[in-house]
Image (cartoon, rainbow, N blue to C red; front, side, top):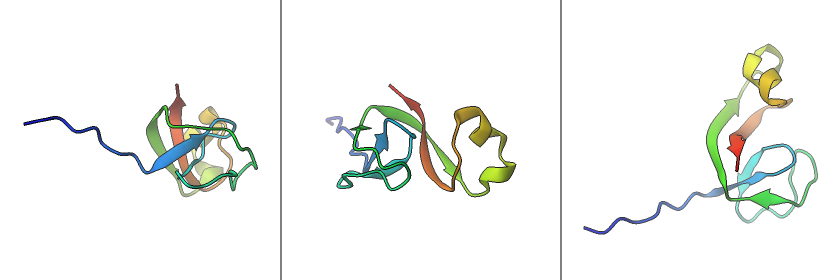
Amino acid sequence: MSARKRSIPFKACVSCRALVDKDVEVCPYCGSREFTSDWSGVLIVIDPENSELTKTLGVSGKGRYAVKIE
């Protein structure tokens, strides 16, 4: 049985940590064009105003974000 590497459908914006589809060229959250595939952890923000994690990570809007960028 061979191990296959799992394909991750997202890349992370280096500037704001937003997770976007791999074919996106400009981050819809901050306008950056710098992305990485080397990230870990997912934070899904539904109510940013009442979330302690968004304050800790510096995330300000609803969406899908990487917890850590390598």
